Amino acid sequence: MNRRRRAWRRGHWAEHFCAAALAVRGYRVLARRLRYPVGEIDLVARRGGTLAVIEVKARRDTASAMEAVTPRQRRRIARAAEWLLAERPALAGLALRFDVMLVTPWRWPRHVTDAWRI
Picture 1 (cartoon, helix red, strand yellow):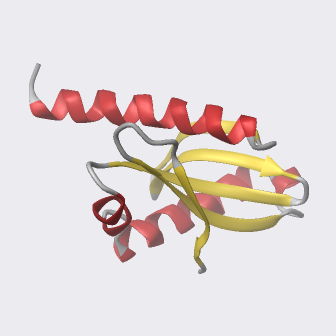
Picture 2: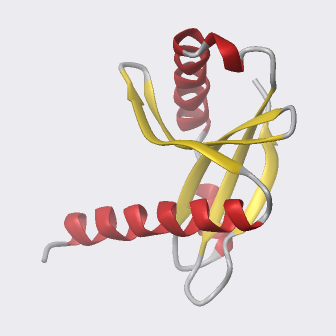
């Protein structure tokens, strides 16, 4: 199996792992792997009055996982969130938050809430 395919599989697994971790912490996962012309959202979850748009990064260590969320990627995710809210107006009344979940080997995912603002 080539490197690109392994990376895709690892990312897909990490998203499932993070969705389960969110459910354990009281979040309701509303959507996974949303694709829009302007960007992609890995996970959308809700807890109470907060809607979390979550980027999942799986890397060897936490620092490199956090660095992988570039300013350009943040802008693309924010634009995709606008499409999400336009597509699902019932979610527009919730407080929008951008989170990152960092997945490293042999550890529970680290959930960084309110990782950035638009």
